[in-house]
Length: 119
Length: 119
Length: 119
Length: 119
Image 1 (tube, rainbow over the protein chains, first blue to last red):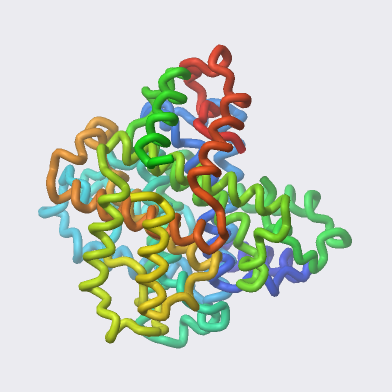
Image 2 (image 1 turned 120 degrees about the horizontal axis):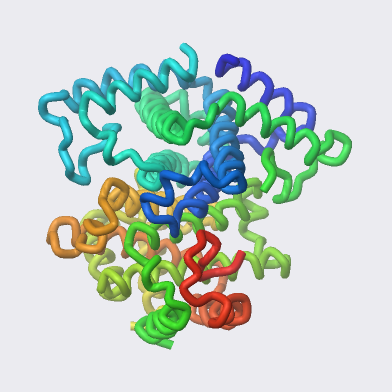
């Protein structure tokens, strides 16, 4: 299913419940952050090794899937409201980051400043 | 572009820079939360009305697009690592939420417990 | 009660339960962020006006108090582990911000860049 | 310096700049979350071992102190606005958690549900 189709489904879900009025960008950003907080809570006390194996436990795996879904729902909703194409934004950002992090300078650089993204 | 194609592009970006070793689920969740923090900073002092018009200012609009892209990149990356299909997870969650929030009970309910998602 | 006394109490609470091993700075920062996520969830769908009156409802007031406590507990714990004095750090930051935001330039400036803090 | 004295200082800082109007509970919670996001960014790519030694590098140590200060400033400000005593709230919460997590049941329990706090 395309991103725009998912957004359409969510839009309809919201419209039917008359929740549109709550979905301004401030509120949706808060809701997005709240969901990410729930994902953090799943991982916070796990060792890196335990975190990598989190999907092997069916109960936790289901929780993780639900939280990822919740995060994506609010991200889709927010970008729908702001009329930002997520696909285009990501592709633009990758081009931007290719310039910012040339392979020969970034390769395996183990500093904390080594990121996937640019400020 | 399909979600799986975006994930493939990001995977390749990471592989070329040998950043795979940093991308465990704990770290990626922290990075995702850090990006959401940057989006919060854009909106934090705006009134709800100003927040709705944020895309009318080209400078802020570009910032918003970049932050949405950063958030999506880490969400794609994390779900790729955890082998969760974001499309499927969202569709499952919407079905779940349709039961949890039946239209006749949820319509326009203006409480703080009125959410798009379920705990 | 002094900040250092609160930290001592929390340290003892943790020691008795043998939870010290989970409390490294990464984990504590994640836990802090998770608690802030719960506070965001309380406020996310409220209008600014409703948010201001949140302490008038005893049930929500209690939730808010609990979340503020949780956030403070992890902040105290983290700064204890990192041996940072919160009082001193705040006082240093206020001096820093006084230079960064001189009154005559900052007064009532209604831009989104108008912050209490400096990057 | 007492918590209430720190709050008084911050209140005065804000009053002089006429920033009071931005400081409603929604906005302050967003600002608090934004600052926690900056702290997450410091730790996100560090190994647990590196994270423990973060204060040994003077540049990063200063960043950490500044972020902890920013977080505390907004927490102090928010609790001041909501008229919540942070000391009392923490002490109440610790009593609550002592009941919730009796030592004999909680000792060294290495599950992800093992937390310092209660939902």
